[in-house]
Image (cartoon, rainbow, N blue to C red; front, side, top):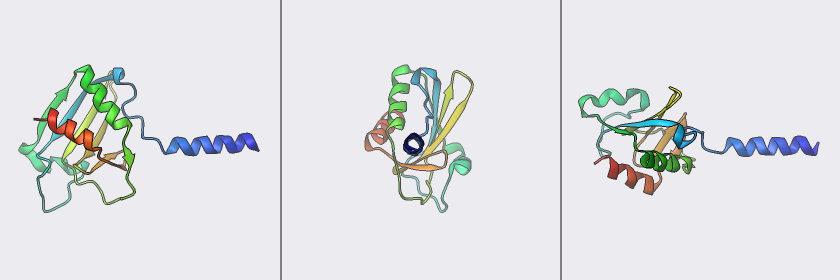
Length: 135
C-alpha cells in the first residue's frame, strides 16, 4: 500500500514538470526562430498553425552556436506553467531540431509560450535574451 502510494505521488509530481523538449542541449542540432515584431497588432488571434498569416513579414534566425543553444534550452527548462488559458497570440515560433532528425515546435509572444498545448509564462530574462539575439 505504501509503495503504491509512493509511485502515485512520484507520477503526479512528474506530470507537473515542463515537457522535455530540449532533451540535452548537446542533442540539439540547431534552433530556428521565425518571428515578427513582437508589438505587431492583428484583427484576429494568430496561433501556431496560422502563423504564416504574416507572410513576407516573417524573419528567420538560425542558431547553431552551442552556447546559445544551451542558453535557450535552459530558459525553456525553467518556465512556469500559466493558470490562464486564453490562448497564445503568436509572434514567434521556435523549432528545435535534434541530431536524431526529430524536431519540436514552440510558439509564443511577449507574455506566454505554448509548448505541446500547455501555456507557460514568458520569463522576463528569456524575452530580453530573444529580443537581443533577434536584432
